[in-house]
Length: 298
Image (cartoon, rainbow, N blue to C red; front, side, top):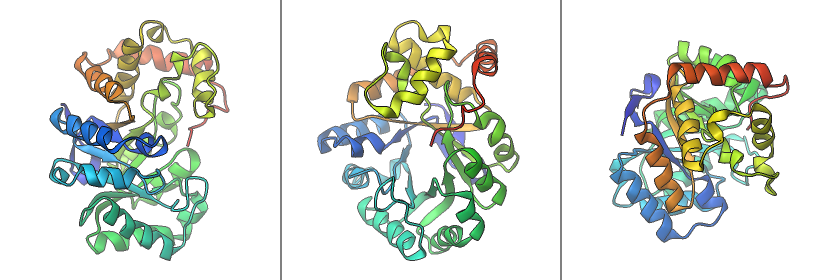
């Protein structure tokens, strides 16, 4: 699998990474997680990205990685130890969270610890950043990063202290291409794309019941990309190839608890890269049809 350098970290990462949100939120069986992790390693994937708030994700990945830790760069996030809707930003809670992640993931160090959707106001106070810097000095993590979107992500980039930026980049979420990525690239930050497949929201002919899909579903109906009118596999390929064609992007994180869907994501990389004219056509349609309220989705 193609490898790219993750900015100034120098890590050579696979262009496809495995995200641990769905296995935790959707209560995947341990056996399924074991098989997905094994398949990821066999296919040259070397990035796993998770977070403390993704249910049992860290614990399951820790068990799956017992004999494979050296095959992967292991990323996690902190700041929501009580759940994604309950941010905890005190020094003591962040420190405890990082230590807990090390225990759950059964490792003596992490390759990247990221602040998880932390506000610009908190970033500017500095204490949350110092916690991560202290963890790096203590050898608990090799690098530190920020995961988030919009003006908060821009504030994180402008601080100049983070090695990486993880942000939503996909066919239905292109705000970062003008708001945050140019400055991040100038600073040689490693760019990690989350939601690179736009949740495959175009698959639904009617509004999905799960609200997680609603924004992208509505946007894609307005964008009406011709590349999404064929079969699902063709659409997945086009969506992933668009995200990986964005300047600066090193790795796209895709998560699933379906072994078949994971195989489809890997297969999507077998096709040639997106042609420059196709990339520009997608960008042109975005500029023509997107609304001023089409901001990055956290």
